[in-house]
Image (cartoon, rainbow, N blue to C red; front, side, top):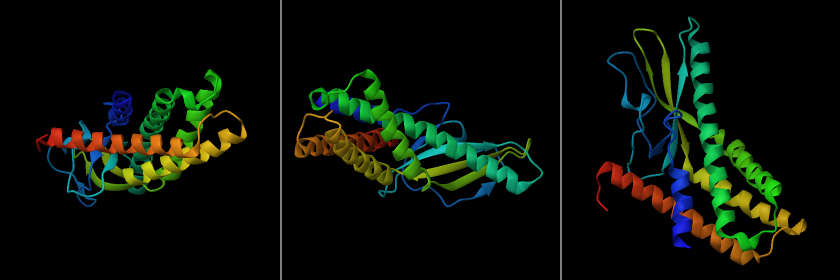
Length: 212
């Protein structure tokens, strides 16, 4: 059981290189720099940890545009799109792993299972993405490309995930597709979320060299 929970936690922490999401804490205030070779967060994940709320980060790119506002909007839209893509996949992974770990809870066929986790992941993404915001930016002095770093607090993601999973329980009871009491459902959900949060902290400490 613990191995299954840790697998679920690990899934949420998988970082797609092409998407470049970053896990950590509050970073520096939003700035725009044009000198140098660019910050490390453009090409690779970085860790920010000030002992406060952890977050998910993504990089957006805006190609040169003489209209500065249009370029900023393009970069921001790119960052939010990357956040949405990454978040949707990771929440789907959480739901799938919860269902696989607790197979005896559900009476769902393959198509219904896909509908179930896609519905929850879309709801969580739509609810939480509006809370994302820019914390840093950098403009390439050579080709004028604008890079922005966006942040999304993971506390809001977990809160939305918990809320939508609890709502899903009520729906599945009405559909007669769930076979467990609410207390057992909630206990396993709490256990999964706590394991995911702990795995996230362990990963950050390991990458920052802060010991075991």
